[in-house]
Amino acid sequence: MATKEERRRSRTYNFSAGPATLPTSVLEQAAQETLNWNGTGMSVMEMSHRGKDFISILHKAEKDLRQLLNVSDGYKVMFLQGGGMGMFASVPLNLLGDKTTADYLVTGNWSAKAAAEAKKYCDGRIGAETTDSGFTTVPDRSTWKTNPSAAYLHYCDNETVHGVEFPADYFAREANKVDVPVVVDMSSNFFSRPVDVSQYAVVYGGAQKNVGIAGLTIGIVRDDMLTVKDRKGGNNWKNFLPSVFDWKKMVENESCLNTPPVYAIYMAGLCFDWLLKIGGLDEIGRRNERKSEKLYAFLDQSKLYRAPVTNEFRSRMNVDFRVRAVGSAGGDDQAWDTALEAQLVKEADARGLLNLKGYRTVGGFRASCYNALPEEAIDELVTFLSEFEDKHLH
Image (cartoon, rainbow, N blue to C red):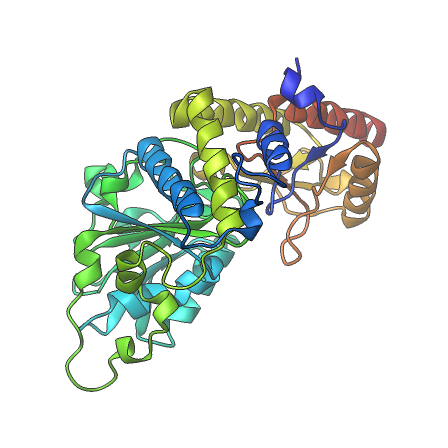
């Protein structure tokens, strides 16, 4: 059954991969406070980023973030700009120090982009990749070729395009531990389940999937990563590091070295508050698990649809699937009916099931099941997909 909050929205469901659907109560509070935040007579969009009113918003957002993720005092929180792609550059620029190599696990579109960007600044080595599988799994730990002298190991926790996600405890498992700092891009599963931040040297991600709107990048960096030893001689990339991407400077200035994305920080704060009120990351994790399990269960029993990602590494956030060519229905081959897929998108839109079309380089479908998407949306999607299958397969 739909909650009262869900009924206040029009009967459409937004499966966009990002920017993505937001909690109705968050949108309503933002609308109510647009002209006059907290009796100040100002909109948050009009506030000075150095004034006491915005600083109070900033401090509460950090406090609630730390509570949700249980971030210890040994880490600093940064509210940045530039998105995940900005971090692809600022990670090596801040962390290389006197080292010349960094390792990357490539399990999809975004980790591939991160590795390519790193090659501008260092020997960005591919420690493992799954290109040959079409990015449908995570390479077995025994196959990794990583460098114990690397500055760090970078990976993407959830590949938004290909629908591949690492288990939450992956690097906590003894067999998977590495001897270098681990940097993780969590852009599309940030705040979607409990996470042990202490596994990582750096955690980062955009807010526009699960905790707000586009324009804000959140970084959580372990203290020792802010004092990386500079390279002696040759190219010291810190000499070319823009001040706004210099994490040490941003931390020293409480993310206000320049004008931060004030409204995006405010919206993230509202989302943090919403998460705390519903029971935190334990509760949202349970909800997200239920949603994805329900959709995968339907896809797995279907003769028309196929979800290609290996079960253990299926994303809870981005469920990728295709329509089989009718002649191959029930088989394991990858013959897709692109004409039928186009028809499905058209009919889904008319049904109010929006933004299901897959990424342009992948095709098929991608149902993004972020925090604010209600479970009822999955029920509606499964019903529609079942009806579509009955109509075209029988």
